[in-house]
Image (cartoon, rainbow, N blue to C red; front, side, top):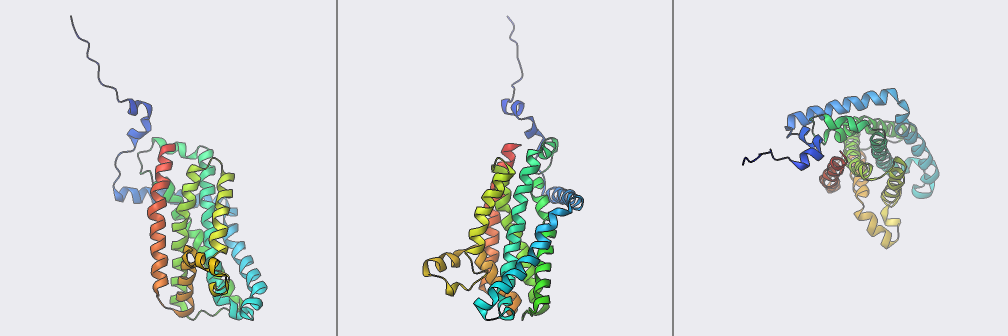
Length: 278
């Protein structure tokens, strides 16, 4: 009597063949693949220039609107209010711009764009990080236009050119790190509309319950306590220290630490959720 020997079948491999095509990818390959995805995203931006509306029109509108409406009431005149509002608008614009990252990601996933990546032996983080690297261009555009609008209105940063550039770079870094929150939302939400709704619920408390538009000393005690622990407040304070005084203070360190913590928490969550959907 003979025994028929059959090879063992990897049930998980048969069920999820795409996992076989995702071998360990070196750091160098991951960086290269991420940059390739970033180049793809920039080409998409060139073909859809309306994606720049929120980082071109909005900074101009918000800077002028908030400065002229609240300048006299809070600081006595617009010129005195500009050193307060410009860093606040920078943070608000960066947060609004990075919110669009999650919405666009969900739209691409719904259209089946990311299904094409299933058969590619690439790092799982590359399709997520690539568009975010491309979005650095959007953050930079928004920051430069905001500062330029402030200069046209009479803003004269005491930190000089170096302090202003440092403030812009910190804003870009904060926007990129916060974008991981919305990227994660884009992978777990069901539709782009739900991503937008949830993102608005996150954006408004973080932005308006901060020191972006008014000094925290003018707020009630319970609200001031929240404002002091709000990560956006640390970013705004750090940008003010850099642009207005040209000083690298403890707020700059807290802002950078907060950005690192956000990336450390939400980047793995986004990649894990994205991989499950692959």
